Amino acid sequence: MSRRINTVPELIQHFGGPNKLARVCGTYVQHVDHWRRKNYIPAHYYKRHKRLLKQADPRLEVSDDLWGWLEPAE
Image (cartoon, rainbow, N blue to C red; front, side):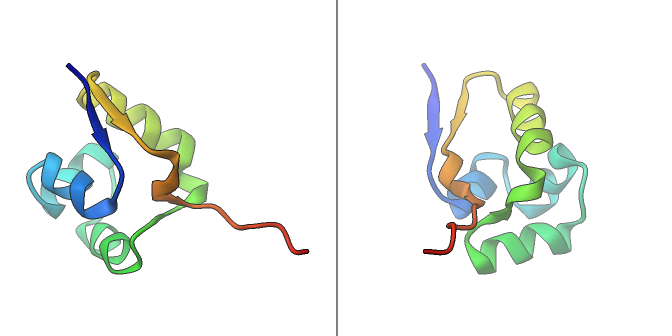
């Protein structure tokens, strides 16, 4: 059974807190705290973090909406 994650706080909780998520993503706890405050992960991390999250938990499905994609100007 897969687990779908739609928000940054859900992702943090899934991995057991900011420290553990930082280890999984190979980043600093301060970055994870920033993601939680902004409620998104900067988009330039998308490929790397998507791969690391899948390696850490193959059953995990993470919404692409967690990354802060910029909308094109109109």
